Amino acid sequence: MRWRYVQIPRLALPDSKTGPKTIYLNPQAIEILSGLDRRADDQLVFPALHREGPINLGEHWIRIRRKAALPDVRLHDLRHSFASAAIAKGIPLATIGKLLGHALPETTARYAHLADDIISESADRICSSLAGALGIAA
Image (cartoon, rainbow, N blue to C red; front, side, top):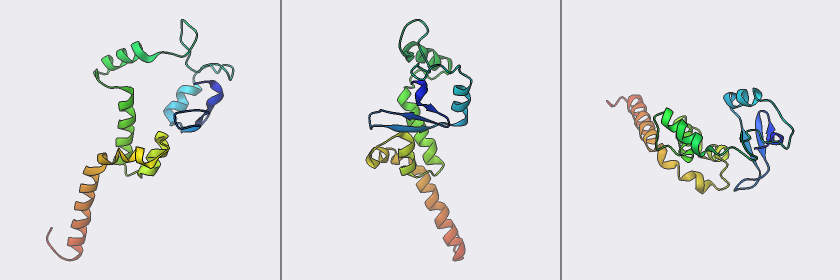
């Protein structure tokens, strides 16, 4: 990621698997980026310390997982967890798809199975409410 893409409160990425992408930053990400020394627009935000090019997360990610006691967590699992949390908060799949940068709704629909418990619980609450309104014991 280059500094020219950092346009607080978002990242404006010129290219991704699905074309240009806007990523909206949360307050924590904004705080981290704001705390970094801003270099020239064409410079990397997170350069490697001992060579040219971006950071390779390989060894760092292994240490992070070990320290967090999550040895099998992959970076992609974080996207899945993000989608799960969004579904649990009742955020529509179309919005989640935009947040994840999915070009097609079908891609986000793969996460729909995560909502099964929420849907079941919602159905129970609705039925209980209707039964109560009709004077039927739930």
